[in-house]
Image (cartoon, rainbow, N blue to C red; front, top):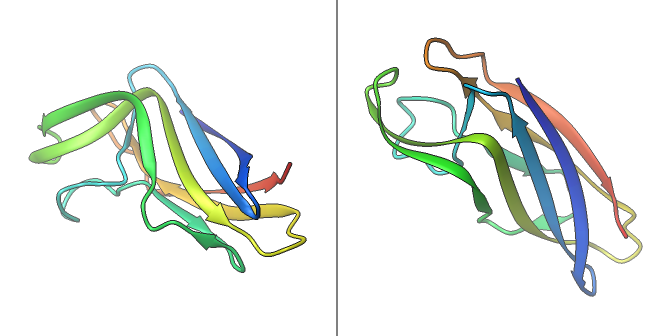
Length: 125
């Protein structure tokens, strides 16, 4: 129900913007990285493997749905159709790629799938 793609763009010497794009099937949602607590859905998380340094925060955009969720009984932020996450990565000299994984949970209006990890690897421009 969710397909991820990873790309990177060079923004300065040894600095890249990592862009992770989720294409989300109709009637399904992926949750924000920033949820009000851990008692509901699993927040989306991006893990970048070493020796790179990733910014603590990530930007996210897409078709956002915010409000009270009956399924979890709390206010949440989720995305439908597409979620784009951008994270600044600083690499060491002669680095040729960025590797990591995305942890996410997807739900429709009636059910949720278990949290999933999706590996990514991006060759640097």
